[in-house]
Amino acid sequence: ILKIGPFSLPVKISRKKYHFLKNSFEKIVGNFFHLWFDPKKNSKIILFLEFNPSVYDELICSFKNHEISPVFLNLRRSAVWNFASINALRKNNAKIVNIQKLLDSKTNISLNNFHREFIEKFDKFWKNDESLLKQFIFDEISLWPSIKDILIKTYEKRLFEYLTMITMGTKFFETQNIQCVVSLNEVGETEKAILNLPNNL
Image 1 (cartoon, rainbow, N blue to C red):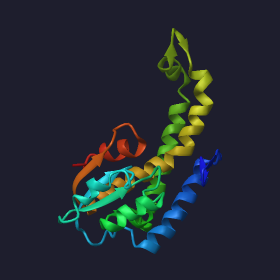
Image 2 (cartoon, helix red, strand yellow):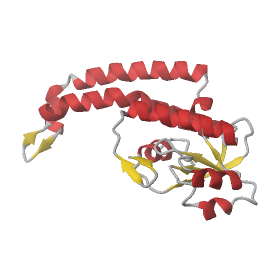
Image 3 (cartoon, rainbow, N blue to C red):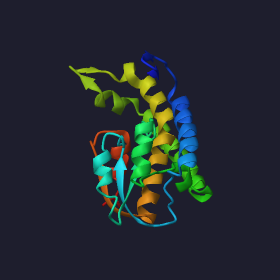
């Protein structure tokens, strides 16, 4: 929903376009207000997953006089989506993660190879119709013929995104001094990808 003043306009855009607009907006705001987290500093950090900074202003402020820096990882709705959020980050010296800065050329090559391997594995998996017919059953009726095409297309569209999230999360935990991870729920895509990492805290 696009809000213009008191008016709300329903605007439908693809997931790809949304992420492009989100990343472009964050790049401008992050650079202008110096909100990007610097992975080279290796400071002690507390990682907030998918938080709205403006709603949890007091919580962020509680870390202001400590050695731990609050860092926000928001892959769904941006942590800088309005002025209140930007101000909450600025006054509390909180930072946001730039996923592109975590993925260097070597990591991107590994990620692309990883993606190709999974595509091949999934291609073999989808061909096993007999087994899948038995897995998706409701009231003794197999739903697999009805959901097969849409499920395969969804996996093909989202696979690279999920692998990127897992790769980024793994590298982040390997290279950063993370003291704590704070999450509002455990069922979101970002939360599941990060909280289930084998090297997580």
